[in-house]
Image (cartoon, rainbow, N blue to C red; front, side):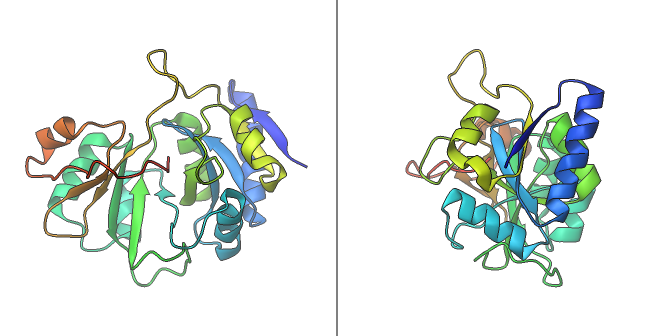
Length: 228
């Protein structure tokens, strides 16, 4: 049976993070608020937890989840051959709605699916998420929805889609903005080639990215939006 925890006050957040950390340690999934949409998370180094995450979403191994981290410095422990332009974007937009696809460190003992030797990293701009990440380490996190359905912007929407496949839900309120019905997902940039390429348009516009990296290439018009 699932349990929902509010995170409005410091005391609530402390209890919620303790419950979430215990659940993650049992190789099970949680739902957490991020600065974009709600995400379903598992210990990035737990193949069982990641498999449960993908099963909850109805997702195949061909769509590996991104990994959320608490600080920019963690990037070097998880990725290698990081381009200078990728570091510039991380410094400019983390914490924030930017996901960077990078070559993964080959020594890491994890199984995120068919990653083709890459890892997608992000530092979210949400205090609950960051506090949780500081307590747990890197988390595999995908948008809290069944594959093909709209990403959850409230914990109630996440519960409606994921139900008891998730043991702990952290309720940080609505992620929707006043200006729109739903929050945009993170912008995803592929930094594994000679030139950085936007592979999914999202909350950070390419014009903002080009202030930092002028030669970054835009996303194709038919690129799908799926993850947080």
